Image 1 (tube, helix red, strand yellow):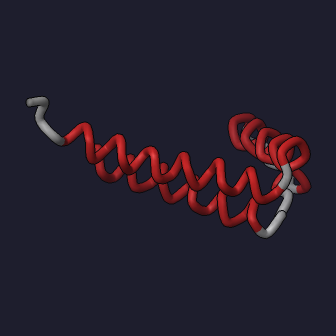
Image 2: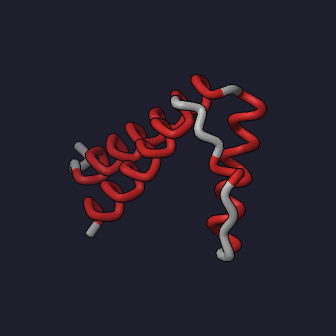
Length: 78
């Protein structure tokens, strides 16, 4: 179950990274879901504040970090 969740969240961050890299502003879209609306507002704010490339790098680092944490969690402590 851990790998399904980690893979899904890493995939979401990878898609957000690509979306930020091509400078696609998600905040132009609207959603009735408050959580999705909050995340799109955050995405738009990051694009406006940091720029497209740093935002895409931030999301890519988050995606890699999630996978690394999932791998490290499976190892036993020595």
